[in-house]
Length: 115
Length: 112
Image 1: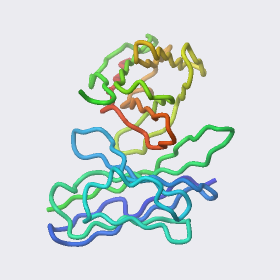
Image 2: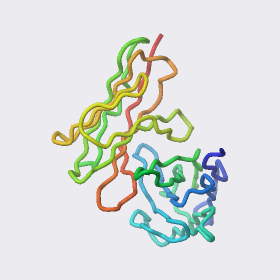
Image 3: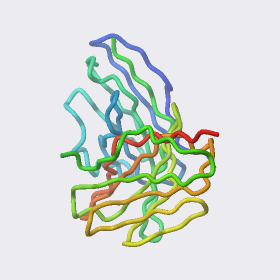
């Protein structure tokens, strides 16, 4: 079974540009999460989809970030316009509740560098 | 005060020894606790989850949870150089919140 995949693995853009990150969850997983780790800090939650609906977007830093999950399959996270402080590693995770437990499986991350 | 605190390390142990990793959390509403292992440049990989007070063993790994003291620990017996990685403690709150709250991680170095 394929794991969570993310594209691209690395992205280098200039301040003010737009970047779109993609996450493909494990097939059949209704829950999809975005997290971010900035340099030297802990991994922080951004938002949570259940199928195509945003369940919790309390971690989204500001309105420059837009996440979508059309059709309840893959998800995109767009940053527009990008700022220097957006640099970091963006992780996607997916899960399916089984017997009341919810194990989140993480993708390899997208390393975003804003110059 | 951070929500989940871990000593950043590095924690250096000799091969074959027991590595003890600790984590404290601030929210008494925390209900689920996880240990992830992350090799440099790789994705976090779940190695243990624990939901009730006490010990939970899985192979060389033992997770310990004490909700009264708000700490969770991970013991790695017979440590191997391949265990060298960053270990992330994560908690999930009660109340329908699925998000994980992570500590900054402890770097473990197992030397031959």
